[in-house]
Every structure is written in structure tokens, then in C-alpha cells.
Amino acid sequence: MADTSITDAFKHMQVPLMILGSEGEIRHCNCATEELFGYKPESLTGRPITDILMVSSMSDIVELVDQPTVDTFAKVLTGRTKQGDQVPLAVRLTTWTDAERGEQHALILRDVSSDLASARQMQDELQRANNAIKGARIGIFEYNPIDQTVVVSDIWRDLLEIEKSDTTDVQEAWRSRVHPDELTTALTPVRLCQEDIVPRAQAEYRFRSKDDTHWQWFHTHVAVARRDETGKVVSVIGAMADITARKTAEIELRRSVQQFRSSFDNSTVGNAVIGLDGAILQANRALCDLLGYPEEKLLCLDFQSITHPDDLQGDLNQLELLKTGEIPSYQIEKRYIRANDTIMWGLLSVGIVRDAAGNPDHFISQIVDITEQRRLNEMKSEFVATVSHELRTPLTSILGSLDLMSSMDEETFSDDVQRLLYIAQENGKRLHALINDILDFEKFSARQMRFSLSQHRIAGLIDDAILSNMTYAEKYGIRFDIDCPDRSLMGFVDPKRFQQVMANLLSNAAKFADKGSTVVVKVDTVPDGIRISVTNKGDGIPDVFRDQMFKPFSQAAASARRQRGGTGLGLNITKQIVEQTGGEIGFHSAEDGHTTFWFTVPEQEPV
Image (cartoon, rainbow, N blue to C red; front, side, top):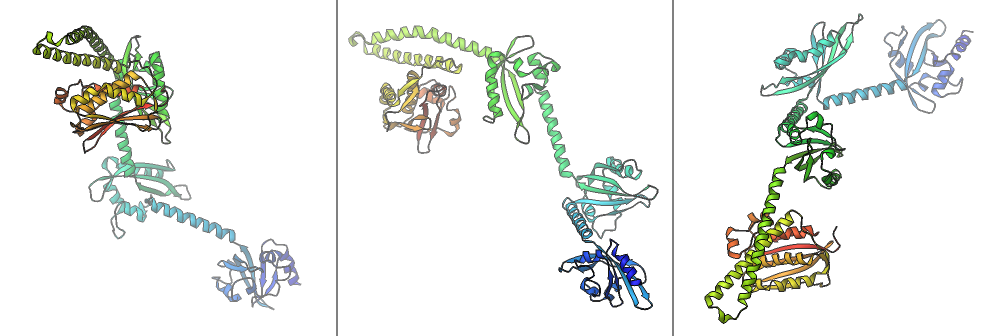
């Protein structure tokens, strides 16, 4: 009767329950137990407990209980389902003695699979956190404000360079090495948490190295860890890290920003920070003075409103190239409208600043007032042009008269007179060439020269150029040779200016070639153009002079002008002709004395 009552009671309980006999046989179990182990109803009764628990006997279970007569939990045991799967179980064991059946055991089972999984997950997370702390070299300490004791981690000791075997008072060691001016700052986080003013606090402070050679920077983060039953703080935990590298970078960055700000504000050159929309974000005093605006008024404007309308589009075009990365910076001369509506010429230099992603953020502009320089240059150009024109007219008449006299019957003049006439003619031609070079130089420099470009056969133009300059070949004892595999090549040139370029290159090659050598003119095709090169063999170009080659009034030696003649403007004029008609120019000089000057002409009509 009693067995029936127990069985009925077990059947209605949701927790797995079993009654075991003294030998570990299963006398009763409920449906929850059968479901847990995957057995059909009533199929477990009479089986030994060793069929479903991984123990050798009932005594193994009893031994796991400290006091067998007390209702308690055994350690986690492993169950085995009918399918052979293992299940971790927490077992509650109750033991009593029945007068008829002897020792009896009641087992309450609980599947702890999820609990163990959670525990493993928590353990993994703790391990990862511990690894992160070690990797980041974060020192941990716990402070007890009741007895004023502190427990520190090994990494905390490493940060302070205190050996584990060192019995030094860590609190005293730490206090003695904090910068005296910052000890209060360093102690404040602990005090705020200890007094329960805030739940967490942090501080940064300097800390002397153990060898007393330099200062380190530490960052401490402190939080309340535990309270007693009255709510009083009884434990404060903290994390400490060495931030010397970061702090040094911050200090250097701050110093760099301060230096930039000082140089920006105090520069005698006008400086401005310009937004992508053209707004003036910052401007220094020099720029405000140049434009005649107070700073607050200038910052309300944009660069478009202070730029002369005729110069605005060119500036905008350059800004677009700068934003797309096609150019790293640019420099142009442009006109600005000052506050009093007068015009100022400025030399504008613009660079771009990009954000971390490489996108344009803002522009940095420098503006130099060149109004007076422009005025003086215009006066100089007008003066040179006036003098040159005034010289050219009488000189043309003089040369005409000398030519006329030279064409007369030779018997009319004595040998001395004829020699003087020849000298006068040659000097007149040199003076005439000098005047022409100066006038061309001024026009090209001011970009006032007009070109008439049309398509021509390059080989024919080179033939004409060599015939026109044969006097140089005869004068310097050299020979001109043409290397043009494809004489049908067509390019866009201004024929008159092309002949001027060839005359300059051929005359230079002849002047500096070894006597008896050959000057070779070669024609090749290159991408989008035709390349003409003039090569001679002579002394070559000195290394120190190569950067000056295309600058005006430049010659390789001071004596060169006297020995071979020339103004030093020819190559500069040549460069400007080539580049302003859509080509490129350059040179190279080898150690064996071969020097080549080359230039290109476009095959398609240049824009």
C-alpha cells in the first residue's frame, strides 16, 4: 500500500525523482526521470542505478555525500541516456532506514548541462579578460579603506618595477614616486569612491621611473567594488596603465598645433584656412591688414567675393584639380578687391588638407602682396619695349645703309674701309638679334605672344631650318645631318616660331660642338606627338649648371658669352615657345660628351 502511494506521488512531480534500494536497485521513479533518460514508462523500475548513472555502485554515490544522514547535494554526476548520451546531473540524496527493507535512498536529479555551459562561457570570458589585461599591461589593485590595506596584481608590480620577492610597502613606494605636484590628483579617484561621492573616477599623473632618470605617465581608473550591509564602501578596485607613449604624442601634437598657430597668426605673409565651399574659416592679422578688413568682417566672407571677377574662374579650376588629387598644390597671381574697393595683386599659394579617410577637408592659403612688384615689372616691360623699339628703327636704317655700301663696287673702298664695314655689319646684326631676343622675352614672359598654329610636314620644316643655319656649320667647322625615317609626319606648329626654336637649338649645338664633328637632327614619334632632337659632341654640360639651363640670361660660363656670343635668352625663349604651343622640352648630357636637346610638337591641334 505504501509503495503504491509513493509511486502515485512521484508520477505527478515535475522534478526527476527516484527511490533506490539498499543495493542501488531502482524501486520507483517518476515520468520526469524516465523522460530525462529516454526510457518508456515503468521500464526503469528494477534496473540497477549503474544503468543510468556512471558509477560502479550505490556506495560511490553515498561516498560523495559528506554526511550520509543529512539531506544534501552530491557533486555533479554523469548520467547515461538509453541512447548512450552523457548528461551532467546535480544529485540531491536523502537516506533513511526502513524496518523491513533496510537502507533506502531518495535521489532528486537536475540536468545541469546549461549551467555548466554557462559556467564554461563565463570562465572563457574571464580568461579572455585576463589575457586582455595582461596584453594591455593593466595593473589591478584593490584597496580596503577600513584597514587601509591594498592588494596588487603582478602586472601592477611590473609597472612599478617592484619584484615579487620585494617586501617594500607598495603604497609607500607608489606615493614616493608620484610627481609631488600631482600626488593630490593621483589620490583623488580613490578618495571620491571611498567617500561614496561618485561610483567611479579616474586621473592622469606623472610617475618617476625606478632608476630616477625620467618621468612616466600613468592613468588610473577607480570604481567601488563592495559595500557592507549598511551600504558603506568596504572595497575599491582600480586599474592602472602606462600611457607615456600616448601622452608624449599628445604633448608633441599640442606643441605642434601651438607652433602652427603661432606661425599662422604672427606670419608677415597673409594666411587663411578656407572651407571647401570657399568660406574663410581662419585668417591671420597680416591678411586682414592686406585686404583692409577687420577679422570678424573677413570671416563673414568667402574668397569668391574678394576675388576679381576676371580671375575667379582660373582659381576655381585649380581648386577642382586640387580636390580631385590631380595636383598637390598650386600657385597663381590674381587680383583681390580690398575693403576700400582698390585692387591688390596677390601671389596665391594653395595646399589641401585631407581627413583620415583621404577626403578633402579644407584648404591652406598664403597670399603675398605683389602689387608694387607687378607695377615695377610693367614699368620695366614698357621701358624695355620702348627702348628696344626706339633702337630697332634707327638700327634698321643703319644696317640698310651698311648693306648698301657693302654692295657697291669693291674698288670704291680701301681694304681697311671694307674691313670696318664688315665689322659694323656684324655688330649691327648682333645688336639687332639682341633687341629681337629682348622683345620676344618680354612678350613670352607676359604671355602676350600670339601664335598661328596649323598642320605642317615636320621634315620639310627641318630641311628649311638647316639650310637657313648653314652659316653656323661653316663658321664653327661642323656638319648638320638629318635622321628622319618617316618624312610624312605631320604636326601642329607655328612655322615662324618653329624655325626660331630650330635656329636656337642648331646654333647652340654648332657653337659648343667639337670642330669637325656632326650635329644630328633626329625625328621620332612619341605618344600624342612628334619628338625632334638635336645632338652634338663637345664638352658637355657641367652638372652644376643643368638646373639653370632654361633660365633667362644663363650660360655655362661667364666667358661663353664673350667667346661664342649670345644673350643667354635663346633657350628660355625656346622653352616658352614650345610649351605655349602645346609641347615639351628637355635635354640630357652624357659623360662621353654627347648632349641632346629635344622638344615635341603635338600631332593633334592643341587646346
